[in-house]
Image (cartoon, rainbow, N blue to C red):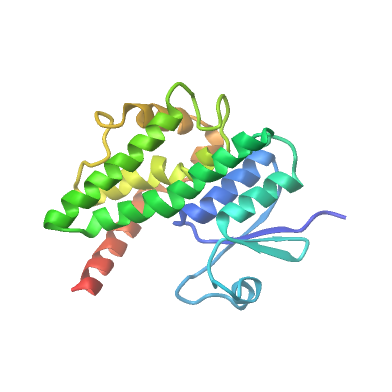
Length: 222
C-alpha cells in the first residue's frame, strides 16, 4: 500500500517551500494542497488546531506542524540523502543555526524593512552582525551542510531567494555581495541546483505579491 504524504502550504511561503524542497531532495512523492490563508480550509484547522498555520505535513493520516519539526521528521522517516549530519555535535550545530535564522535573522530583517530614522540604523546594524555570523559559519564550505545541501541550507533558502527579492521591492541595498561575499557565493551555488529552482516561486508573481504585501503592511501601520 502506497504511503500517504500530503503537504498543506502556500506558494509564497518560504516555510512551506522548504518542506517541498526536502521532500524532493529525498525523492518522496507527495500531494500538495494550496491553502488560502484568508480562508483556511477545515482540513488545515483540523490538522494544526494549535497554530492554525502552514506548513502541515500529513503522513499516513498523522499531521506534523512547524517547518523545522517537519524537516527533522522527514529526515528520520526517509533515510536516503540525509539532510542532518550523523555526528551528534554537528546535528546540534545545524539545529542551532537553523533556529538562529528563523528566530533572529528573519525577525531582524522584518524590522529593518519597516523601521525609520535612528531605529532603522540600529536594526540594520543588528542585521549586518547577524549575517556576518552566518558568513563565518559558511566560510570555507560550499554549503552550510558541507559538500552537499543540508538542513541549514534548506532553512536558509529564505536568505537566498526571499531576501534579495524583498530588497528589490523596497529599493534598498542592505544585503549586497560587497558586504556579504561568502553568502552571495553560496547563493550562486545553491540556485544552480535544479530542484531548488523548482521550489522557488515564479519571479513576477512573487514580486507582485511582495509589493502588495508590503504596501498593505505600511498602510496598516499608519
